[in-house]
Image (tube, rainbow, N blue to C red; front, side, top):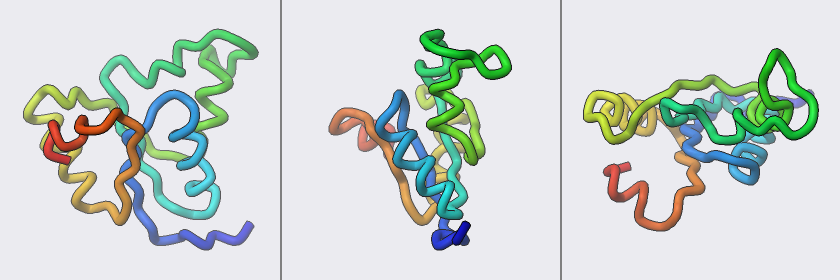
Length: 107
């Protein structure tokens, strides 16, 4: 497969389906996608509808394959600093929070 986006780094703050699906396509095209999840994980991880893969949600695996992942509590200063460092070193910041959330965190 042609890796058109090779060398592109994406900080992915998205959860559930639409955002992770979009960034999984970018990962398939060669981008380095770093998924930043809450400590509890993306809520889609707990979705037990359909088949399970290694004890986890097949939907989560489908929409998040090919990504690196880190769990951070953005309400904790140390974790927020880590998220900011990932964002600053990325070419693209992708999120699907409601308007104002990223600004609240200074991202």
